[in-house]
Image 1 (tube, one colour):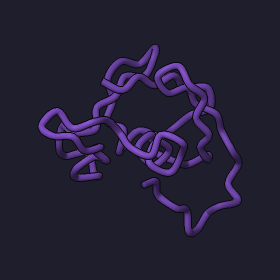
Image 2 (tube, helix red, strand yellow):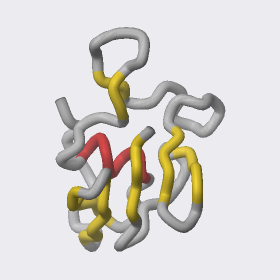
Image 3 (spheres, helix red, strand yellow):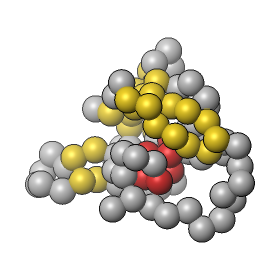
Length: 91
Protein backbone atom coordinates (compact mmCIF):
# COMPACT_ATOMS: atom_id res chain seq x y z
CA UNK A 1 0.00 0.00 0.00
CA UNK A 2 1.42 3.41 -0.87
CA UNK A 3 0.96 6.72 0.91
CA UNK A 4 -1.67 9.10 -0.37
CA UNK A 5 -0.81 12.79 -0.57
CA UNK A 6 -3.30 14.97 1.29
CA UNK A 7 -1.66 18.37 0.92
CA UNK A 8 1.03 20.23 -1.01
CA UNK A 9 -0.10 18.44 -4.16
CA UNK A 10 0.69 21.41 -6.41
CA UNK A 11 4.47 21.34 -5.87
CA UNK A 12 6.48 20.91 -9.08
CA UNK A 13 7.04 17.32 -10.21
CA UNK A 14 10.54 15.84 -10.31
CA UNK A 15 11.83 12.56 -11.73
CA UNK A 16 14.12 10.10 -9.95
CA UNK A 17 15.56 6.73 -10.90
CA UNK A 18 15.01 3.94 -8.39
CA UNK A 19 16.85 0.68 -9.02
CA UNK A 20 16.97 1.58 -12.72
CA UNK A 21 13.28 2.48 -13.02
CA UNK A 22 11.69 5.93 -13.28
CA UNK A 23 10.02 7.25 -10.13
CA UNK A 24 7.84 10.36 -10.04
CA UNK A 25 8.13 12.61 -6.99
CA UNK A 26 7.52 16.21 -6.02
CA UNK A 27 9.93 19.02 -5.20
CA UNK A 28 10.40 19.12 -1.42
CA UNK A 29 9.93 15.37 -0.90
CA UNK A 30 12.46 13.41 1.10
CA UNK A 31 13.67 10.27 -0.64
CA UNK A 32 11.56 8.20 1.75
CA UNK A 33 8.42 10.19 0.95
CA UNK A 34 9.13 9.82 -2.77
CA UNK A 35 9.46 6.04 -2.41
CA UNK A 36 6.41 5.58 -0.18
CA UNK A 37 4.10 7.93 -2.13
CA UNK A 38 5.40 6.89 -5.54
CA UNK A 39 5.21 3.76 -7.59
CA UNK A 40 7.65 1.94 -5.28
CA UNK A 41 5.26 1.98 -2.30
CA UNK A 42 7.93 0.71 0.11
CA UNK A 43 11.56 1.16 1.07
CA UNK A 44 12.74 -2.45 0.95
CA UNK A 45 11.82 -6.00 1.87
CA UNK A 46 12.35 -7.07 5.47
CA UNK A 47 15.36 -9.30 6.02
CA UNK A 48 13.56 -10.88 9.01
CA UNK A 49 10.23 -11.75 7.44
CA UNK A 50 8.15 -11.56 4.30
CA UNK A 51 6.87 -7.99 4.58
CA UNK A 52 7.76 -4.71 2.97
CA UNK A 53 9.55 -2.10 5.12
CA UNK A 54 8.70 1.61 5.19
CA UNK A 55 11.45 2.93 7.44
CA UNK A 56 11.36 2.95 11.23
CA UNK A 57 11.93 6.20 13.10
CA UNK A 58 11.36 8.59 10.15
CA UNK A 59 13.59 11.25 11.76
CA UNK A 60 17.16 10.18 11.01
CA UNK A 61 17.93 8.48 14.32
CA UNK A 62 17.93 4.80 13.31
CA UNK A 63 19.70 2.82 10.58
CA UNK A 64 16.64 1.44 8.79
CA UNK A 65 16.30 3.67 5.73
CA UNK A 66 19.79 3.77 4.21
CA UNK A 67 19.82 3.93 0.41
CA UNK A 68 22.63 4.66 -2.02
CA UNK A 69 22.51 7.78 -4.19
CA UNK A 70 24.75 7.64 -7.23
CA UNK A 71 27.56 10.14 -6.74
CA UNK A 72 26.77 10.75 -3.05
CA UNK A 73 27.07 7.32 -1.43
CA UNK A 74 24.86 6.05 1.38
CA UNK A 75 22.27 8.45 2.78
CA UNK A 76 19.26 8.23 5.07
CA UNK A 77 16.15 8.30 2.89
CA UNK A 78 14.05 9.92 5.63
CA UNK A 79 16.20 13.04 5.92
CA UNK A 80 17.61 13.48 2.39
CA UNK A 81 15.72 15.77 0.03
CA UNK A 82 14.95 14.32 -3.39
CA UNK A 83 16.46 16.18 -6.32
CA UNK A 84 15.47 15.91 -9.94
CA UNK A 85 17.56 13.28 -11.71
CA UNK A 86 18.81 11.48 -8.58
CA UNK A 87 19.64 7.81 -9.06
CA UNK A 88 18.76 5.75 -5.99
CA UNK A 89 19.65 2.15 -5.24
CA UNK A 90 17.90 0.27 -2.45
CA UNK A 91 20.11 -2.12 -0.49
